[in-house]
Image 1 (tube, rainbow, N blue to C red):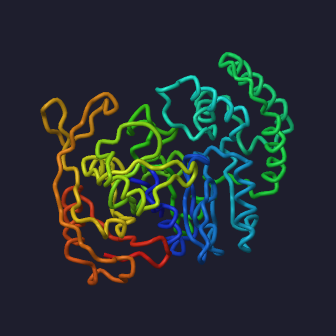
Image 2 (image 1 turned 120 degrees about the vertical axis):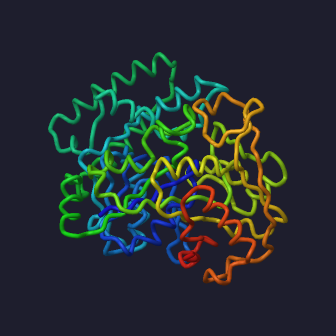
Image 3 (image 1 turned 60 degrees about the vertical axis):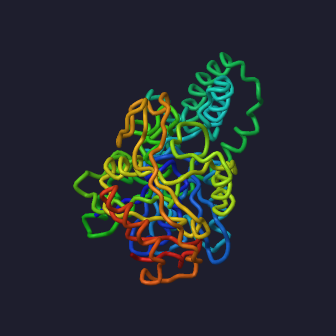
Length: 420
């Protein structure tokens, strides 16, 4: 049986904490897509930890953590993260496993990412410059090097061949930055990677499922950044939706059980691209300030706005969401009035659907207003203590999107989750 946790907005919904919260109920936690552009924040005791590659179940000693074949892996980032996790007394060589099919991010992928983004000028998409896009391009172009290739004697010659191909592209971009220090780090990290558990993860996971073991599939980014169904071209390079679990881990659709979607009580987005409910005013600034909305990976200020129910209903549909986790509900505690977007106004007409060319149309959100609750909800422990205004806000969202909020996160701590 496989349950899925994924984001329902543009990423940064707080999935790391949610996976960490659910992880003790599972035997395996597995990342199925994305790369080090993910930033999953969780707290170990009172210490903040941001994971980019390693699954968020790593701090649970009895949980196996798998980096699946749908992921693109930066060995340098992985080594740094393993060192960080080890500083908490966790033996990563015991409970971290990596699929031999996982694609490697090379130093030249990072260079290509940077060169491509620089060339786009004002039309740049807001890449994190981690090499994710170029790595996925090599995957679909059948040129990629994978973790399993590290065990092949021809790895160096394969690397040189791919590097020369990349260098020609970099020459076309007139990219002259010296990446030799990146390569030194890369090969040092490869030696470390060779000491970890490299497995045929599709066989491992399916064998464990057959034994009755429970798997939690952890998504990165969010549904509105999906390469196929997101706000193209301002998207990531992988399938962030529940269907990506099957291709990223090698499990069949019939194994998928619960799909737990994570949404903030409002909306944020990092980088460029359409954001219909964005607030470029003092309210947006207040959401950013109270919510400490700065990217876990990039540190960039997040764009902030009210919750977009048109998009949320769409992402619940695409993923087959069975349960919703609403995060950062406490950020709304001090607002006099809250708004939710219930439709898009486009060329004088209202629609409840996300348009195909959302990046090319002007959208006027149709709002429904709610009174704020003016209560410090961060200290509340159970659903009966929630203010009426908050329960009404949540109930409306449930009815609108056709899926129900089962958990409300009211603070960053592990214990700050209310079961509804």
